[in-house]
Amino acid sequence: MEVNILSVGNCDQNILFKFNFIYGLVGWLIDLQKCFQDQIRLQGQVRLLEHRVKQKQLKIIQLLEKKEIQYSDREDESSVIDLGGKRQYSDCAEIFNDGHKQNGFYKIKPIQSPKEFFAFCDMSEGGGWTVFQRRSDGSQNFDRLWADYEEGFGNFVLKNGEFWLGNKNLHYLTNQGNYTLRIDLTDFEGERRFAQYARFRVAGEEHSYEMNCGEYSGTAGDSLTGGFHPEVKWWADHRGMKFSTRDRDNDNYEGNCAEEEKAGWWFNRCHSANLNGLYYRGPYTAKTDNGIVWYTWHGWWYSLKSVVMKVRPADFECNIV
Image (cartoon, rainbow, N blue to C red; front, top):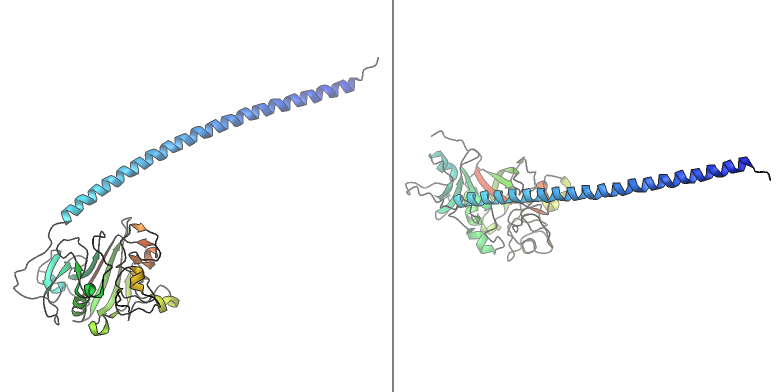
């Protein structure tokens, strides 16, 4: 019987090829299993590290909150400063230039005001600033009626208390001459920015406390006059707007901005700035953009941590006392 040696050789080669293929496949599967095991092990290590990072972050937040509470406790002391009634001051600039450099609530009496009232004097940023609005912790409700905004409301004792000086007082104050408005803003990440406007003035009750201001400068962007884009001024410019509350609608909107935005403000249709909005802690969701909003910095859906609105005579010069 004749045997085809060539056929037997080819058969052996096929078997050897299949054997090598199976052996390689088994090796690849073993390597793949090891890879999966390494992946599971690494995922476990990542989760452990994430857990430790979160613990550290939580500890840092707790320490910061504790420090902030301690700081707030120091701030929660009476900040009313009695000068003894030796003379009347028309604003905080006069108080500063009379040698009183301490921050606090002083009695002032603008020229046309029928009576004295307490105003917080901020003696930083060159001194002499009369503060008419402050937001710091959400302790005061700013969703109020016309009469409240007209007369003023809030805490006029504590250094860090929230308040609105009153539209009537704000009119008396800014009607004395040429005043500069400065707005100091802080977010929940600790960053600070400011916006400053020339020729800030609030009209009287007969004009529904209409607000006007001039040129912008600063780091927060121009949200008050819609200066961030020429095509938005028809709804975003707050100049020339009367003050609105939910019981006194003076805006240019078909609805009631003050009612929707939960604040009294110089609304247009409705706003690119609303510093009397609801107090949220940073990013928020709501039916409307009703937080403490400065659009050109954080947009509509981020509510700021703190706000200070203050005025000072444009021709203010610091006396060295």
